[in-house]
Length: 111
Image (cartoon, rainbow, N blue to C red):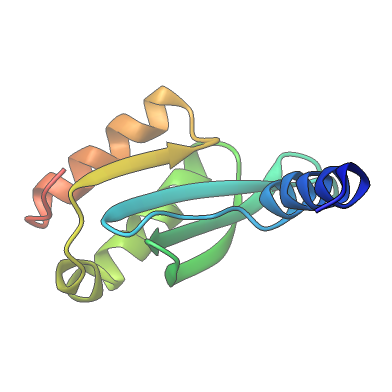
């Protein structure tokens, strides 16, 4: 393999990694992807590994966390089916993480 080919493939790997992240099996992800417009809005996603469990549009404030917690409750049975060993939060504030964990405890999901 030539140096030019190697560098091209390395560059492509990094581009792909940032545009299409790789999620690990056995990890339950709570993710907020912020949208530029309208301001302070985004998409809340729940994934287990690379399997999408739920998503919904949210605001990045208290009402958005209420919607996120409702999604967790609606999809609790599906979340239980996936064997996850850890939880990762992506772009979620610590105060919102605490509320998500409290919701999970109330409905009997491990965290």
